[in-house]
Each structure stands twice: as structure tokens, then as C-alpha cells.
Figure 1 (cartoon, rainbow, N blue to C red):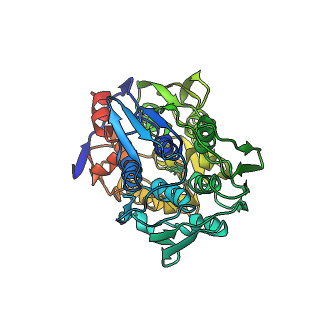
Figure 2: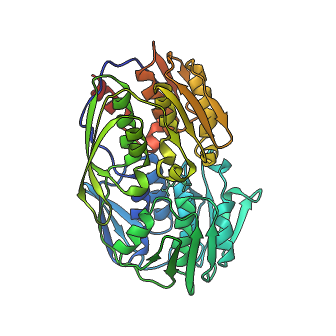
Amino acid sequence: MPSQRITPSRHLKGMPVIPGDKSISHRSLIFGALAKGQTEISNLLESGDVQSTARCLRQLGVEIQKVKAQYIVQGKGGYSFGSPSEILDCGNSGTTMRLLMGVLASQALKATLSGDSSLVKRPMKRVADPLTLMGARFDLTNGNFAPLTIQGNHLHGINYELKIASAQIKTAIILAALNAEGVTQISGEIHSRDHTERMLTHFGGKLDSRPEALSIMGGQELKGNKIKVPGDPSTAAFWLGAAALIPGSEVLMENISLNPSRTGFAEVLKRMNVQIKTQITQLEPEPIGTVQAFFDDLKGVKVTPDKVPSLIDEIPLLAVLATQAHGTTTIEGAEELRVKESDRLEAVAQNLRAMGANIETRPDGFKIVGPQKLRGATIESFHDHRIAMAFSIAGLVAQGETEIKDAECVSISYPQFFETLRELTR
Ligand code: S3P
């Protein structure tokens, strides 16, 4: 699937089935691997990134099997993985690499982690730094990048102030803290997605969670459990966004994660005038429910830095929506987008300009004044799944045909994306 062609659509209607949440899928496999006994995961996301985590865990001696529709993980009952004989290839997945750094830092082994041409350009010192303070030893390429080698060591708890609101860094520290001596306290920017904190409790672990700090006691034993992975809200976002753009549209999605640390995009859509209805059907261990969106005229919106972590992966799509909204949309405090699978601020700007739109980029965000007409263009995906999907949605409201280059990258998080797009716009 080298490139995909998108033509304008007159409406979008249906009830797409949304695959499992990517963040929760990675964590299910990792917690299952560390726990005592068996973990049964249903609705695990079957995508490139999650396969990277499963592949690395298998290389570390963890047994993971698919039995009918479930994934069964035979837990190691602690931090006792085997030394990998080869490099652990994390593919395109930052979550795989960063979470495994936390898992491996305290184990009596040496491992080298690497990834594809995008992952080796992404910063890893931000994870290695706190783990080094705990006693782990890392050798990073040029001091910041993969390939990186971990020499596991006996760890001790630390007090650490997080400077970046990143769930991946927070999770790496929590995963290391569980096998460290004493207590680890994390303060600062801790209000990113909280799936790790919730899953820890689900596996029988303890964590003291206060608004200003998280405390984790070392030496905890986790117990295998059953997990049903909810639908990924960052995937559902594409259909909410498309429904908001195309007159006469309506979509309804069930079993979607409504975790408040992930609902930022839906909240911004409401502020943009989109009719969104949500209904919670389950609260524990993760809030899950139904989401419905209908077309309405969009208006511009201001997104402040405090909201960015709750919609970090949806910002490229938000930029596309902003071109069709009346008034000004601004995003601030989104500098992290520059170190995702691509520099997403540049990728968005380049592709919107190719479609004839104006966008003012800033080091930490952008300003878009709408509405603006989009015309079909050749879109550079930069092999970044979220760029490919956001601009496919742009293609639905552009004049003429849009070509998405290297479109196979959608398989990183949503392999069925184009198939579902065709079904919904038929
Ligand atoms: C993720 C956290 C976010 C997000 C990524 C998945 C996670 O990254 O962008 O897609 O599963 O913890 P950061 O923690 O680096 O912001």
C-alpha cells in the first residue's frame, strides 16, 4: 500500500468498531509479563506498535500466545527476564522503548534497544536520566538516542520532579520503582494519561496518588488478571473529526475509553460547536462508554498548554478541523509534537500549505484562521501514522483528489483505517 487516494465525501455515517487502545495494550502486555500467574487480554490492539512490544517481551523470555480472540501472557512473577541474545527492535514505537527502559533498568541483564529511522531520532535521555539517578546504567548514542544499551542494576527510590508532561517517562519511572529499594516519589508534570496508575491497582499493586505527587513502594508483587482493552479514543477521534467536518454526518462508537486524561479532543470539539454525546457504561478499572457526534458549523478555539496532554495525539487532526472553523484557532504548549514519530508541527504546516491553506507555526504550536478552502494535493505522511490519517480526513473535504504517500504507516496504530473510511463514506 504505497499511497492512497482520497476523494471528497458527501456524508459520513455509521457505527465503526474501534480497535483497542494503544497505550493500554502496551501496558497490558508489560504488566502481564511482570505479574505472577496468567493474564488474559481481550481486544488487544493488533498493530505494528503493539507487535513491537510483544516481540521484545518474547525475546526477553516472556510467553505470549493468542488463543481464539484473547492474548494470554504467562507472567514471570517479577523482574526476572532472560538476557536477550539479539538487539531488541522497538520498530516505530516510542512507548515500547521507553517503557522497556523502565522494566529492564533493575534486572540482572544487559540489553540493547533500537528502532526504525524515526525512533532513533527521538530523545531517550529524558527517560535514562531519572533511571540513572535510581542506579541504572545506560549508554546512549550521542548521549540521547537509540541504539542504547542498558546494564541493569540494583535500584533505589528517588524523589523526582518531572519537567515534561509525558506518560511514557512517568511510566518508565513507575515500572522501575516497583522493583527498587524504598519509595519513589514523582512530582511536577504528572497529569498525563494515567493508564499505568490504574493498571497497577488492577494487578494488585499499590500507589499513593495525590494531585501533587505519586508515591510508589518498591518490592511489590503483581498478580495476573483479566483485561478488556477499551477502544482507543485517539483512533475514534478521526471519525468524530470527520463527522464534524462533513454536512449531514453522524457517527456512533461503543466501548471507547472515556478516561478523563484522554477526553481532551472531545471537549475541544464541544467548544468548537460540535454536538458530542457521551454515555459512560463502565467506570473501573478504566471509564468506558459510547460516543456520538453530529455535523455542525465549527468555530475556532483556543487550546492552552494545560489541555495539551489530554489531546496530544489528536493535534494534527485538530489543525485540519481548524481550517474549516469560523474564526481563529490557536494551540500553545505543544512543543512535544516536534519529537513525535515526525516533527508533527512541521508536517502539519507543510501539508496544509500543499492543500492551499495558511497556517502560522510557532515553536510550541500554531495559529489558523478559518474557514479556508482546501484543495486536493500530494500529502507527505513522513511515515507518521497520525499525519497520514489526519490528512486523509482533510482529503474528504478538499476539492479534487488527495494522495497520501507511504500510507501503509497507518498500520502502526489503526491497520483498518482505510477500509473503515471507505465503509463510512460509501
Ligand atoms: C503514550 C504517551 C504519549 C503519546 C503516545 C503514547 C503512552 O507520549 O503521545 O502516543 O502510551 O504513554 P508522551 O508520553 O511522550 O507524551
